[in-house]
Amino acid sequence: MPTLTLTNVEDQVFTTVRRGQDAIVDGVQALADRLAPYAARLPEAPWAERVPTATELAERAFAFAEKLISEQKDFAERLLDAAAPLFADTKVTSTSKAKSPAKPKTAQAA
Image: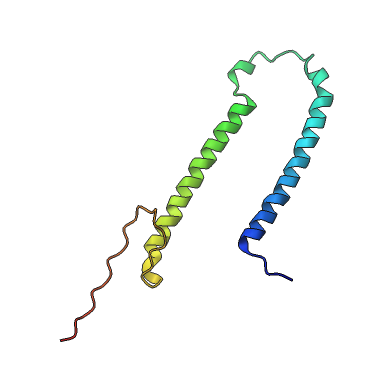
């Protein structure tokens, strides 16, 4: 049995997630197709124009999630850089804003 690399595992996860998402989208599409004639007959709610659309809500949610992920990535990079002295003077990230600690000077032989 071949050893799976992390990339292979990631690809398998994304493939599985995509299959599940496709099944859900297909189910919602079938339901929407069946209910569309009935939904067209419903009166519009008087407050509907004051409520964000589903698309607007999704855009806002993903904008928030992107900002949150960006902040978490920055935090993780700064945290790893702060802990770098514990890991053999190795700078963990190159994009972090944290300053790497100065290396101690070694004593010169006389």
